[in-house]
Structures are given as C-alpha cells and as structure tokens.
Image 1 (cartoon, rainbow, N blue to C red):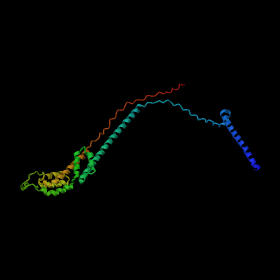
Image 2: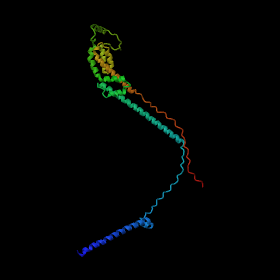
Image 3: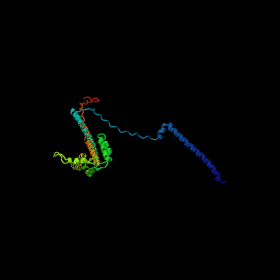
Image 4: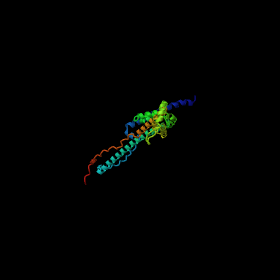
Length: 299
C-alpha cells in the first residue's frame, strides 16, 4: 500500500459532508424566500414581477341629442292618388287573370281540334287510331260518348273512299239488273214501265243507269251519303249488300267526326268579366305624435 492509497479514502470522506451542508443551505434559503414572499409584503413587492401599466380606453364620442320626431299627415290629394293607383293595379291584375283563363281554354280547344283532325286523317287513310284512342276518350268521352264509340268501331274496320269507288264500279252490273230474286214477270213490268216515264224536266231520272251514274259521281266527289241514297233505291241493291254496309259505316264515322269537331269548337268560354273592384275606403289622416321630450324654454 502506498501513501496515495491511504490518502484517497480520507479525501472522499471529507467531500461528502460538504455536499450535505450545501444541500441543506439551499433548502434553507428556499424556505426562507418562500416565507418572505408570503409573510413579508415589502420583500414581496421587490421579488414579484412588475404589473404592466393600465392602458387608458379611448373616450366614446358624445351622442348628439335627436330632435323630436313629428309625423306630418299626408295631404288628402296624395291619399286619393294612392288609392286610385291601388284600384288601377287591381284592375290590371284582374284583366291579366281573365286573359290567362281565356288562353288556357283556347289551348284546350286547339288540342281537342288537333285530336279530331288526326282521327279524321287516320280514318281517311284506312289505318287504326293507335295512340289517339285514349285521347279521344279523354277529350270527348263525356260530351259525345256515342260519337266516340262509333269512331272507335269504324277505326277497327276502316273503309276508304277509294275502296268505295272500286266497290261501286264492281257492283254496277249487278245493281243495274232486276236483282237475283226478281222473276221474269217483274223484269217485263220494269221494262214496260220504263218505256213511258212522266216527270218534270228538273226532276232527276229514276232509271237504274241514271241512278248509278249519279251515285258514281257522288262517290267521286266524296259525297258517300248521296251515293248511298241512290244505291239504296235500285232494284238490284241486294247484290251490293256489302258495299252498302261499308258505305253506311263510312257515313256514320264521318258524322261522328263532325260531332266531335263541333264539340271542340263550341267548348264553353270562361267568364272573362273582371271582378268589380271594391270602393276605396275613406282615407284616415294620421294624427301627429307629440314629442316626449320637453321643449326648450324660450330665452
């Protein structure tokens, strides 16, 4: 063992008491400072942080005193002019409403006419109505139910004017004869009766050939009803029963179309009389409000 080894333990033993003494002194100083801050006001003023100086707020400007409110009544002429203006505006609004109702009715009428014209065109072409059937029922089902039913039935088995022309020309030989059920005696009587015919010069001829000529001319002109009347009086009309049935269906359908077109044109018009404006009430002049603030004394 050397001299240095003997001196090292004694040196370490002398350092420890010093550290303990320093720690105790630090704790004692901390306790003393805390006591001074809580119990000694003079020391607390020096040790505490300084408070910032208060910033003065800007002074609010003084509100000027409001003058008293005095309500001036409107002149009688101004009140009457304002009432007249209101009545005029009411009249304009009523006129606009009446025109709008008329325009709505006219639009409905135009749509109904378009449906009727489209149905006539379809029947003239010999095609079905298709999408027009529900429109026909909706537009005319209540006003003209029988006419609508006739048109819908005719559209399922349409007959055109060309078919009637061709059918009449084909049935002409049979119509000019005496008919399949006429005997020889009836044929002889018809021939003898046709030898001498007394009639007025302006009256049409009753001969079958003349009736057929008039019927053919009527069909060419589109007057199927006249042609049907001539053919129905011919002695050989039983030979053209099919043509007569088709012609009757054609005539019934056109008469029904005429009815629904008339119903569309004669739709009821709305009442366009503008409502009577109520008389303007007597104007009431507002009373002047007295000021709540006392008036300043005269100098």
